[in-house]
Image (tube, rainbow over all chains, first blue to last red; front, side):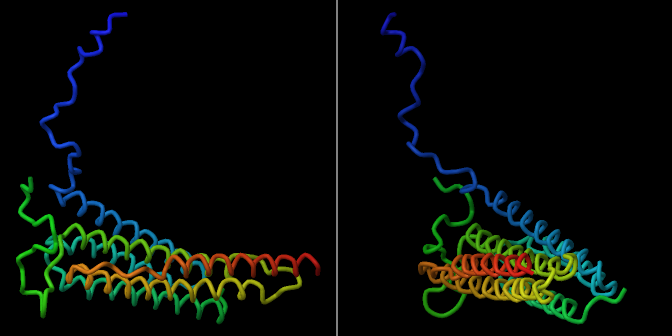
Length: 115
Length: 134
């Protein structure tokens, strides 16, 4: 067992910074991509609620499904990350839509379900 | 070694157009992260609404506890709406804090979520016990 062999593999270069910053520090595109995927997941969740509502009420279900389509489209709107003025309206709209869907769900659970 | 065109420190951003005082536009990545957090809470809210709707509509009635489904489902839907509203409120506050370079406030949502799930679990257990004793 020659002890010199341990030194043979090249050590990590000491000249480099000890902790390289993650790639996203240089590329906000990854953050953008993650956010887009989050919008996609949210749209799918909307569609799931729409399908559940559809089971008891046709018009309300189709409406919620349509809202899911709008949320799906919203993810395209933030091409420019610097534009945050429209962001407030967008997210407030999503929030109010969720509240509206909750109200529809409440009404449906009390009114019963037309067969 | 910042090669990107955006500043890596939101506090140093030179854009003073945003408003009074020291408000500056935060790094886009922070804005994105804040937005993703909002979307995650929105999905949580939708899951609550979906669960409430499913309990009221799809479940057969608990024997002996005819109001059991509503007792479980209606709070789920209401809590879902509350999570959505608080999630937006939190997004707004975080965005403001990012612009001013302040620390973000503590979120009330994890506590709300834990209380809601714990409370609903207790109510579910009570309903099931009442139904079993019937």
